[in-house]
Image 1: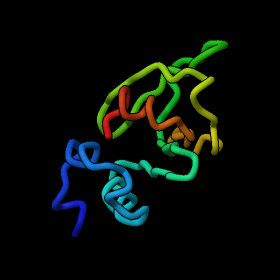
Image 2 (image 1 turned 30 degrees about the vertical axis):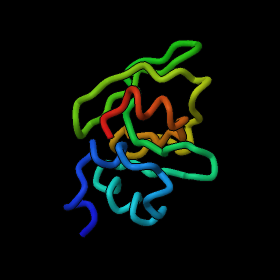
Image 3 (image 1 turned 60 degrees about the horizontal axis):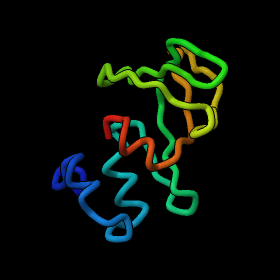
Length: 101
């Protein structure tokens, strides 16, 4: 399986054109993250710990990682589920710099 061959660090070393969209999805599926090459965005899942006028403090329940996500760099794409998890569509540069992928 592709996800067993490539590590998280390997994924970002590869040019995004080197992998098909379905291969990227397999690699990232266990991380609750999905890349959309047409919009150069990721959909990530996180809980919101705090909200300000300009940002959300989001928490990755799997890794425990927290980061401030500027509202200008993301859109909320789902309502909060029963576990408090929300999906965000986030610009790729922010995810690569700030999120554990």
